[in-house]
Image (tube, rainbow, N blue to C red; front, side):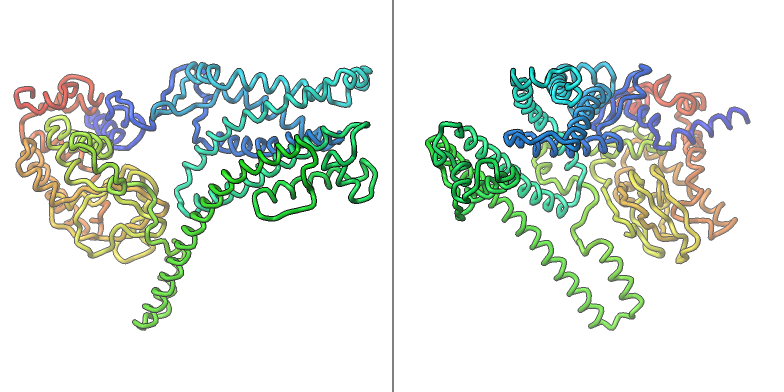
Length: 587
């Protein structure tokens, strides 16, 4: 009894799709998306690139970077010091200092894997961005200290102005723009997390517009800097657009506010991208050369950006037109067919919830990727085995088949498996329909409603096998399976499975398992027919059924079975390679 109890507890643990099981199933093989960790005490502080904390910090990085992109070129206007700018400068400097420290504990993607080992993470940061970040942060703190009002108490303001230290250091703050390269990679990772094509298209349009405005901002600041650099005490007021603007308005030098100069320069900058014109024109050779350069750049960039925005807008309009078309079709069908008001409202409500997007998919499947069609059969087979085996092997029967008849498992993965995804509220099957597949939930959450009732339901967790009975008996669905969240499932076609196992080496094992499965079904049915569902507790006896099938077949001893129960693959008979275990002589 103690031995049996220990066996049941261990099998129950192995049937769940947890990390320990996945490590056993993979036999130490690294797969895409796996996280590499160490046993160091520092490991607990390392964060994943996709963790909520890291995403929040990355969003803050983008926000602070946007502030730097806007304020740094404004240094050319020699803005007066203020409490607000002082506080903003301090906050941004503190933020980038903290970013240096957090970069030592932030995992990164490497060759399809997530590197989380503290030593590797630290060395990677030291080899890449550490030197640049330290230089930039050092300059930021130096500027902040030298430019702060606290220097008054040391009598150094006059010295600073004499040596122009503040101006030089403010120019060096342009080094902050190097962080834009780092932030661009962050933006790319964040955009990869968005799967809605409409949202991505909208973000692209906004980014194009923001890019044009940002470029105009830099050109405007540079245009003012070029014009203001030509102004001296002995220069002719007509030799610069800045002084000529003052003469045209009849005001003395410095009467106009810096905001007016900036807005005028921005207006001039935007006119270089369009056929518009204004009263500000170049007044000397330097300004005219600058204008020529801006026109050349604007012709190249603006035409490209304009075509990209046009293409994105056409795509959005096409999607919007298709949505309105589907709305019209639904209303017309409901009206023409005299559908009841209650049912019509339910249909319209469901479609509105899914935005009438008939092509909406929660995840990518193999058949959606056209490039996979040119892969050789050997690579396709290996790909499908790596995708489907981790989902099937937690089932003790398929674990056994994989160890004893590896060729059969290859055939199952390549010809009998399929991928499915559900949006919130969508059904996988309904009550009374003939079943054709066994399903396994990979991601998300499902709700199973027994029969036609709504009150009697059960939550389906990741790793649950649904409707296994269809593999062994003729089966009709006993309830309705609905997605509570966006969910991914894999399906095993019953007809294909039966055809493959009819000639497989493990056919006797499956045959004895099917006989025992039918016996257990009849036992449960005799007790209470309503207890038999698509996720019936019959499936919880599958470990005992595999053991009974082994005993009936007489090929595997009870001691060998206990090696699987106690330690999983890795000892004795179970440690043999799949191909060796498939040979009767090996058993």
